[in-house]
Image 1: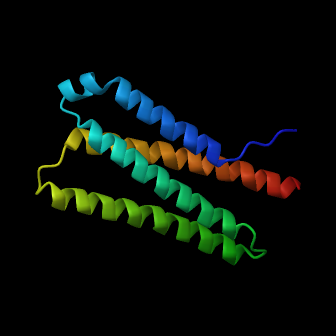
Image 2 (image 1 turned 120 degrees about the vertical axis):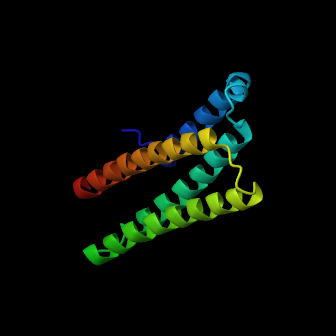
Length: 131
C-alpha cells in the first residue's frame, strides 16, 4: 500500500491556488481584487498551515492525551498568530486602505487550508490507531 506524504496535499493546494490566481489575473484585477495580496496571502497561509501541521504531528508522538491537547492548542496558536501578524503588517503598510475583496478571499483560503489540515490529521490519527 502506497502512503503519500500528507504535506503533498498542501503543496498541491498551494500550487493550484497560485495557478488559478495567475490564470485569472486580468479578470481579478478588473474586479478590483489585488492578485499580489492573494498570492502573498496564499503563501503565508501555506507556511502557517505547514508549521501548524508539524507542531500537531509532533504532539501525536506523545503517549498522553495532555500532550495531544497541548499540540492542538499550540498548532492553533502558531497559525492564528502568523495570520494575525500578517494582517496587521498589511493594514499598517497600506495605511487603512486595504483591498477588502482580496482579504475576504484570503479568509476563505484560511478556511480551505484549515479543512485540509484537519482532514489530513484525522487520517493520521486513524492510521495511528490501526498501527
